[in-house]
Each structure stands twice: as C-alpha cells, then as structure tokens.
Amino acid sequence: MPEGFSMPSDTAQPPASEATRPSQTQILNGRFDKLSAEQTVEELIRAIRAGERGVLSTVNVAILMMMRSNARLQRFVDSSRWTVADGQPLVWASHLWQQPLPERVAGIDLIDQLCARAAQERIGVYFLGAESGTVRATVDVLRNRHRGLDVRGYADGYFGPEQAEARAKAVADSGAELLFVAMGVPRQEYFIEEQWGNLGARIVIGVGGSFDVIAGRRKRAPAFVQHAGLEWAYRLAQEPRRLFKRYLVTNSQFLGLISWSAIAQVSHFRRVTPRP
Image 1 (cartoon, one colour):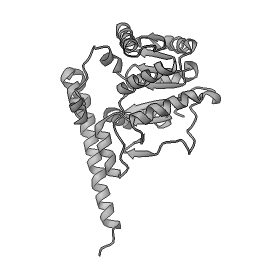
Image 2 (image 1 turned 90 degrees about the vertical axis):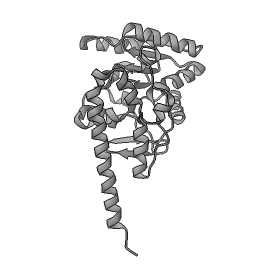
Image 3 (image 1 turned 120 degrees about the vertical axis):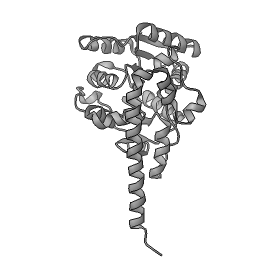
Image 4 (image 1 turned 180 degrees about the vertical axis):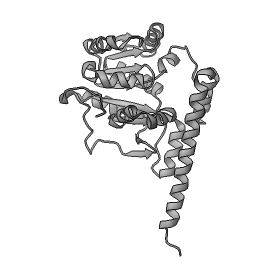
C-alpha cells in the first residue's frame, strides 16, 4: 500500500486473485488493466456483490506525467485495485507494446454507467466534491437520468484537513457502497489515502472535474474530438490561462518519452532479430 495509508489490515484494499485479476499493459510508469468500460463496470459491481473493497484510479496523460514527479501519487495509483486509461493517447500508445488496451475508460462515463447499474440493483451511492451548488446539480441530473438511484448523501469538496475525518465518517454513516470523489488530482487521492479506514464505501473512485461537466458548468468535447484524442485541446480552449502550462508541459513530455520508447524498441528488435 502507498505510504500514508493508515488502515487496519482487515480494511485494506484486497488484491484480486490471480484468477480474477485483469491482465495489464505497462505504459511508461503506469500499469493499466486491459478492461473495456463495460468490463470495468461489471468488475466493480462484482466486487460490491462479493463484499470486497478497492479503489479504481482513472489515469490520463496529465496524471501519468504528474506521477513521474510525485512519488506519493505514483504509489497511490500503483496500489489501486484497478487502474484504467482515461485518455485516447494512452490507448494508442499501448499498441507500441503489442498489448493494446481495448478502449478508453473515462471517469465521467463510468459515473453514468455505474449509476445506471446502482439504480437497478439498489446500490447506495455518495457524491463528494466540487462546489455545493455543483454537487447538488450533479445529483439532480443523475437522479433524473436514473430513476430509483439511491443517493445516500452528497457534500462539497471545500473543507480543510481538520474536517476531512468528519466528511469521511459521514460517507460511512450513510451506508453508501459506491463513492465518487471529485476534488481534483492529487487532492482527491490524498483524501482517499488518508481516510480509507473511515470511508466505509466498498468502491471509491476519484473523478476529478466530472461533476462540473455533469452539472453543466463546463462543456465536454464532442464525441469526434474525444475519439481524435483532442479532448485536452477542447478543455484548453475553455480554460486557456489555467491549463496552458499544464498541457504544454505534460503533452510534450509524454510525446518525447513515448517517441524515445518506440525508438528503443525498434533498436532492440533489430539487435535480437537474426539476419537471414
């Protein structure tokens, strides 16, 4: 487990058995489960039914690059029970290792898909993060979209360290089995890490700024932009001052590292391939 996880052994994230653990693809410093969105939902619902606990990490290019300079975040993702690629460039890059990921698994889509299943199976859900008006609007949208959704509670993500334990225990007291945390990376990961023993929920997922999109506070890129791997550019156009430096640095770093890895693989192939 990552340093900073403070939990009794009986509440720690259990490792999946060799029989049920999805195969993985290594991309630079990240290990990604080879799961489609549908398979991810089925795996999480299976874990809830079985009474298991675990964290799902959704990692995009920006987060993958952030992990390289943030050892705590890297350890958190490495210890997550499941890690999925929330970015089309990562799916493309996986082909370099001849272990392609089936598709992008976006955190915002998982919210919708999991809420649909939760409504059908009466699984309690809790929403934590964003501003108070945004999280309330998110809950309203999802309740209208998925009739019968059992929302056990919701709260904004604007609280200090001294209030973190009380927020976590409120989730546990609600009896929710599925928790979405939308407080941005890496704050949401630090909160989950520090409060794991108090949260109670079976499945916990950090979903970044997804509540803002669901609530209509921010527009999501059209499907064709997502499939083209340019969702970052769409977001940049909406928030250029805040995101320009981040995307300039992380995208350039990712492209450079991937290119170097591809060159290294070709060189290795040439060395080990016998000449006719």
